[in-house]
Amino acid sequence: MVRYVMLDNQEGRKAFDRFIEEFLDNPFKDINERMEKGRTVLHYAAQLSDVGIVRLLIEQGANVNARDDRGETALHIAAFAGKAKNAKALIENGARLRKVMVKFSKKEREEFNKAWKEVLDNSIENINKKDTKGRTILHYAVGMPDPKKVRLLIQKGADVDAADAGKYRPLHLAVMGQRVENTKELIKAGVEVNAVERSSKFAPLHLACMVSEIKIVEELVKAGANVEQKDKFGKTPMYYARNNKEIKEVLENVKMANKQREFIERTRESTAAGVKEELKELETVDEKVL
Image (cartoon, rainbow, N blue to C red; front, top):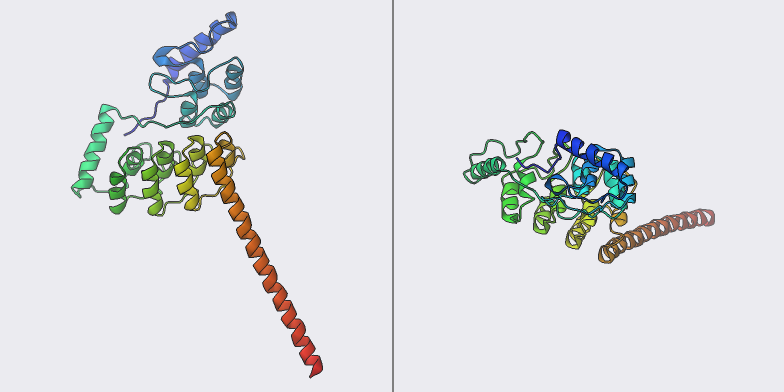
């Protein structure tokens, strides 16, 4: 159904190789020159090369947040190509994962509309049926600005924790799309807030910090999201929020509250143990007196 932009390997490889050859011959060539479909060499490298090339291009001045004609950055492409090391290098050098737009082709729109009509007519055979990418209708609905659709699907039995081929769950996609109300609907339905996707082990809270959506961060932590959870690179959500003062404050407050709660629990346990010990001593004294 929905297709995230992926570069055509043959077309991309030719454009990428051609640019690198020209750049080596002429180091003064504009590293951010636009090629086919508004892409830069970094867009191609994010999917087609290893992390060494990505870092080299960044060092030479490649714009990590350049968008192509469809609004995709190198980070979007690296993330959906499963290039975890490339994505990490881009993030470390200032790449911002803004709203990930879900784009429908004509055929995909027709398929979604057909499935949605079946839902409304109560004629859909399996609301949790998966497509070739392992996604259900709910995966796609959460990327749209219509929480009523999400709510109805959940009421009709849509699995809020269904994972696609990349282990992305509806909550991951709602967060990346900055769909606050859809996120709330999923949380109300009891979604697993700390589930991780496959390639980078990002939990929804990591992604919420990447897209700098404070309202979603607040909803996730209220629902029990783990602020200390580490991704594949050993990074907690705080790392991805380091440039956002408001989100950092939310996470720090949660960490402080957790520490205070742990302290109170330890104090209670210690006090209870101490009282038990004192009672034992009193019992011993009573026995000696008797």
